[in-house]
Image (cartoon, rainbow, N blue to C red; front, top):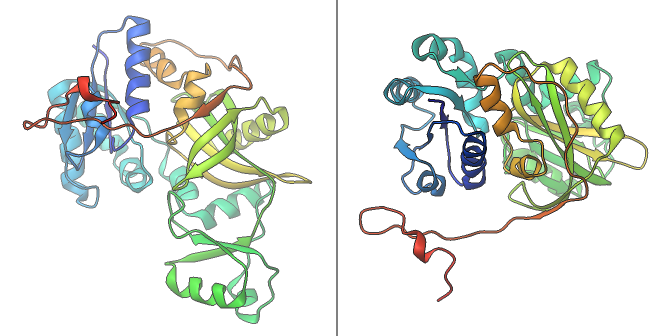
Length: 332
């Protein structure tokens, strides 16, 4: 049995289904277990098993709940999905793995620290020769030595929360007081790309798939197209070799008029990851293969110029909080 535990399942219905599809296609016996702190997380009701766990902020209780689920269901792999759990899981990875025998799909704490603090990301990029938006110092900001428009965001932000374009000195002053631990950069223009990467448990690169963002909602891609952009693929491949992450990694960058500039690195499955998975870079299938002892090699055999349009769908839970599929998608 190869059982997969998806943490903070939330709205990740697509991801749950991608794991189920890969399992069934490979003929593997196993269950998908979805866990969340809220019983109203939609993805819970698409998994084979769902579990309610403490909030991530309850550190020890959260980790113990994960360990208990792993023991009870003989879990083979633990998959985190949101930023706020990454540092905790990375720091407790060895404890969890020794206690349960399950693998945690998480990079080393050093990598998570680089990615979760966007100022650390900027420093890493610059030190390794990668371009990023110009970062303004506090002294430059205080002295007004800036060129508008600017972009301001929290150093440890997520989902584009408290991230704003800034056009005037008045806006800059207000946002600097409003945002916790802000960082201010030049405002980039160009084509924005999200790049899905997959690396095995030893940080060997298996795939790099760029997708151009056509529209976003709450910081997550809503419409996108897979584009086999070779310069971006080569640059991101080099970035992954310098960073040494593990698992499915989501890189955001901008193709400007003169260069590729990196915005952020998310060391987890991004919300739009199923786009690359369905295009042929099936990191869910690859994880099953790795868990079953297979050796993987780099592949760029994914479909090009494929467009994806994401949308909302309602599900109905009955009086016993059971999903009633026959009503899904109905229009009243």
